[in-house]
Length: 245
Image 1: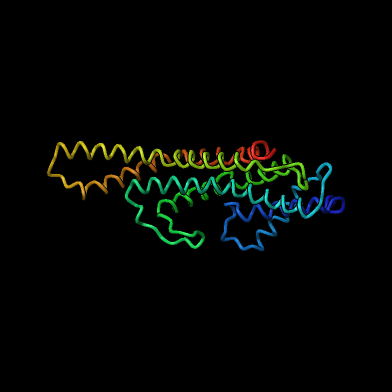
Image 2 (image 1 turned 180 degrees about the horizontal axis):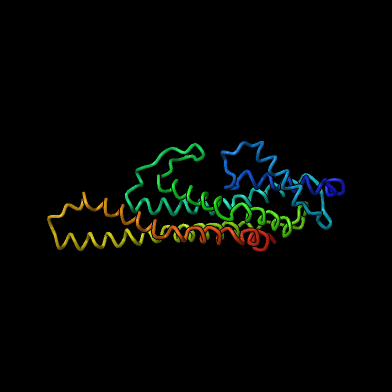
């Protein structure tokens, strides 16, 4: 309450940044009503707002804070999208690419395994230390990048290159155990095709690939939580120290 009386502009600009963040952030998600996100952003702004040094309050700094919030939320959303990318890559190798459904939150269809990995990532985030890390993320974000600043600029080329590389790397790490298991099953099928020429691979092959992919997913489930949290940690430092200058 003292901060509201002393520096209401700082609270308002922090609220603008958090509002942009929750528009694109993967948590609490698109299904949460907009008024609930507004209330959540306002409460967090009251708790985490800090008075910056030499602030410049104006429409241009307000727009920049909104853009920063959108970029931070998008950076976290890419972590979840990387899980979906890994699931779709593995699902293609398992023969599940044709099994999809229309997702109203997207502009195209999404495979069953890609959607499943999205729910796995969100479930691990919500059931683990995700909510507390999200609060630490926002507090660190305001600390490293104060609101109402005019001496910041976005290195768009470094942003695009780093985000694309990290998303591809994370997706490969998620899908690698399943793809390796499917590769082993295909080796087995190749050996069986030579040893038993009468074996009908059109019937046995898809079921063996599917079983190997599921086995690879179950065997690597324990590693998804640490991978998700490592990708989540340090995101705000990257935003403040590498994407901004």
